[in-house]
Image (tube, rainbow, N blue to C red; front, side):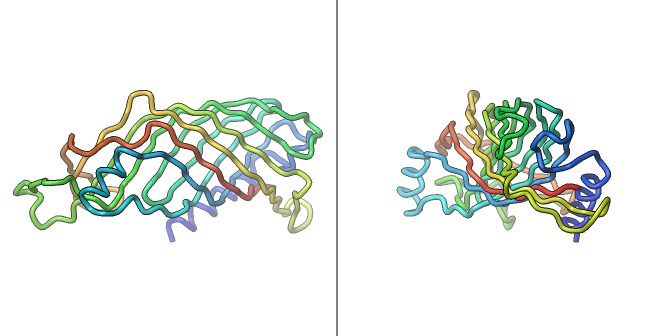
Length: 229
């Protein structure tokens, strides 16, 4: 219910904001909410070797759901994005420039990003003894790191279509995106449990040092559908 309400509010904002979502040069400012599917690729040789030695398996990966709020101001764009899957999640703020001409069949933007990369694989630190406070709790292993990156956002204007008429029309723009992320400061593993629920939930954890870090470079690729009016 909460997710549906957030989606409704975002679509409503798109409808009142400013724009045509067909980015072929008819408007100089556009706000687009894009939803889609995304896949993260990352090389984890040290972690996978550790996982196979201790648990005889590797990270199980599921394709992620993607959300993007993109504001286009003539030749520049900016926004926020989130790729949420299992076990990887990453989100960022970005700013970039248009690469293609205003009348191009594909509107492409190259962006610089700053964000956070998170992972929650279903493993436990080897030979870890839970503290008295952790006894009987559902313990989880979490990884977090800050990253900088480059991304390419592309909207297929030739496949743009509308539903409805006049001011009540809703526009749809298919697209695809690529993202390259680098974690220059590395990341940390923490092991613990959640206390409370909902917005008040707090992850009570201890830093662990005997789990190898994940790869510090990752790549995302995905498809999406932009929604606006």
